[in-house]
Amino acid sequence: MNILAPVRRDRVLAELPQCLRKEAALHVLKDFHPRVTCACQEHRTGTVGFKISKVIVVGDLSVGKTCLINRFCKDTFDKNYKATIGVDFEMERFEVLGIPFSLQLWDTAGQERFKCIASTYYRGAQAIIIVFNLNDVASLEHTKQWLADALRENDPSSVLLFLVGSKKDLSTPAQYVLMERDALKVAQEMKAEYWAVSSLTGENVREFFFRVAALTFEANVLAELEKSGARRIGDVVRINSDDNNLYLTANKKKPTCCP
Ligand SMILES: Nc1nc2c(ncn2[C@@H]2O[C@H](COP(=O)(O)OP(=O)(O)OP(=O)(O)O)[C@@H](O)[C@H]2O)c(=O)[nH]1
Ligand SMILES: [Mg+2]
Image (cartoon, rainbow, N blue to C red):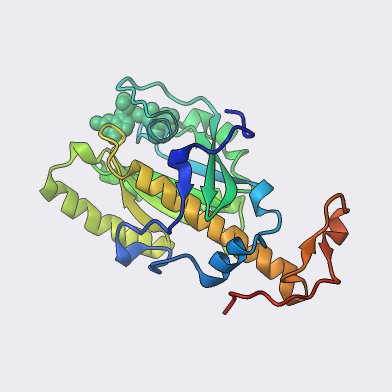
């Protein structure tokens, strides 16, 4: 997909999508962080609108990583299993609070023989999505190892984690309840946000990726505000300036809506 194409109307986020379960959420605020809302209103989001955030999707073979990405990005579902060889990626453009924001979704191979190729693409992720099959407890147990491998290449203090149970359509309600109890525990240990989805029916797929986009965007804006610091907040970005001198310092107008 051409990243310069206009943002699709169904990729526009004006509000913070909510978590699935409060017990295992990255945060349970109803709205975006007030500093983020304010920065967006005043177009003080620095380079966030030009950046592409990397998201990696990992987990055992055949848990449904490719189907999950394809359901969201292409609205398709293939019932035949075709192993991912190494890696693949999709670009998704969003508009969050009026600011363009792009995610690069990296679909990695779960098969052991392709794992060493896939793991070379783990570096630089801003979010890690660890997928397990809600109908296969072993795949949930393996998520800890997938997380450890992915974190070896990333900064654990800044990366956002999501634990996603797939193939929800194949569980009976009773089976689901039991599996969810275990998955919530694992998610809490990992400090990951828990989701349960079905790529076959599409249940929760869009809600999940919107949440990933929103929280990744929020983290990016907060990091940008932190980086620019109090000295630069409210300054005007200078067009055609070099990287070390991106902000005009003459304009010290105080932001009107920041707490
Ligand atoms: N019923 C059902 N089947 C699913 C779902 N998601 C994936 N599948 C099936 O599970 C199989 C594996 O799906 P993939 O998405 O290819 O799995 P993967 O995790 O990408 O596998 P690797 O690329 O080998 O790591 C395929 O036959 C899919 O049709 C789902 O939500 N419901
Ligand atoms: Mg795959």
